[in-house]
Image (cartoon, rainbow, N blue to C red; front, side, top):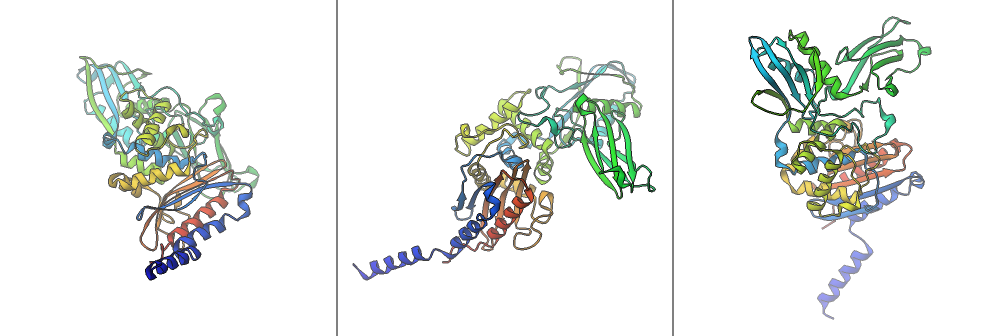
Length: 475
């Protein structure tokens, strides 16, 4: 054997006996975390990848199926961003059918829903101003809502019926106003007196009982509900108020909430209209386009990932479904088919190995793997446009969004851009890390069978700190 052969053989033995410091340290530290008694009753799937070098750094049960919770929003967002047409804004359009005579519309007014999840008071007033500028003061016909963009199912497969009346599970429709929920702010008064309440949006669509009491422990914990078992919109606010407090509650039938408030705002502005109903717009010779309120997609994307907003995610999900099917009326199943097509065509994985039920991750019927999520991150990283859109919309550790109060110290501070996920029994974190050697790392962590999400989040934060300190192999 030549001297050079002996030298190379010796080097190989050294590498085997003493693994590369950076890689060994990462694996050893994560393995040590997995020795915690926390994992005697819970499970975890992990996948970590060096995007800068193209190396897999760590996997642990990465092919194990689990409900992903809200990190599914990353898959929805990435899949949707593959459609160039998605750059077009969300639109809520106005039309009339009939004729204008002086200041009177002899005919009907149509508002066509485009599932704008950011539609608020400013948006509503924008539509009102379009009517006033016609100019119109009287409408003899009916104010119709066109909600034909999607099917009539309010909730997705696997959504929990008792998650209503919580704000995070609204009744979905193409006409959303304030995301279909009301925000209630309570301020204390004199001891024993009722707290003062403020509602956003303020509307006669719902009624209220104020059962609060100021600085009175006997009043119990502050909270709000409504007669949701009866599909009613009578809100009850109760409990002890010692400082400014707030809560949110969904309302039954988002499209009714929208249409009622639109008619109310029109009447307040001096436009007489009384009848409302639902009807799909069919254009003909007496149909006139008035205008549209538009919301940029990147605003929706930012809200979806930063605040983990479910309405924004489902709006993008249905928008993608309509582009995928090239049809107007779509369903949750159509959105799922669009995501499956993305998994097959772009990620080159078998979509039949997974279960996609919605776009937000609320459904407990969703089942995917850390491997799938990692492939999604790798795909996004390889596409400059998609990566930039996702990266700037993701929460930053210790700074904003759902990571504002996590990883506020150490190397992970500001260096982790990631999406959180949490439903009963599931806690997940998926995103990107900038390591000390300036490498870009992608990671996926899905904890399941978890009784205390706090422990799962602590575990995830420790892994992120390890990744941020990753120096790579010694050269």
